[in-house]
Image (cartoon, rainbow, N blue to C red):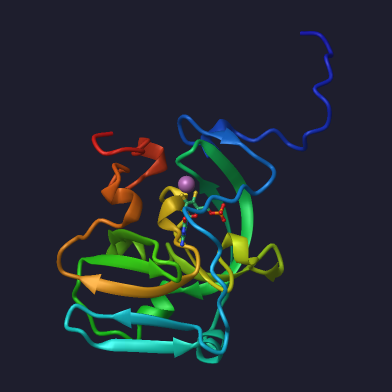
Length: 198
Ligand SMILES: Nc1nc2c(c(=O)[nH]1)N[C@H]1C(S)=C(S)[C@@H](COP(=O)(O)O)O[C@H]1N2
Ligand SMILES: [Mo]
């Protein structure tokens, strides 16, 4: 083999990091189905509603006083871009759900602005999901979901609802916005579950 320089790209990453049909991006694309909502932190709230209609509510100060974690994860969008090794700060859903009595199997996430998305509750637990308020050492920018968004990196990024406001725990699954429009109900990037029937 010759000594053709590929230029400096850092260590070459194993393609094992990239799910099928995905390409790498270095920037951070913004994908929103509507305008970025204006959210006043004084009025912000996060509400978890159980299947028996019990509610647990946090205002911004209460939420921010919970223990948070820094996580470095890969993001995979159904529109084929992936961004690797992104660093976030957030509160684990395990921490939030500790305060809620539930035996529900499903969750429907809702956002300021009206977006919704659904997933099995077990995909929110065991250190798989966070309510993130920091990105790359800074406050999470509004266009990326600030003040706080759901982060569920093991599923396609449409499950990571920006501007999260509510988590409704349900005994029966209920499709969210994209899921009702033909996107896959579960959305595992490693199985390429992009659309209904994949
Ligand atoms: N509230 C809300 N959350 C959302 C969306 C949206 O339109 N509204 N788009 C989803 C989609 S399709 C993607 S790919 C990611 C994009 O996140 P980003 O804009 O930070 O890249 O947000 C997800 N969360
Ligand atoms: Mo997306």
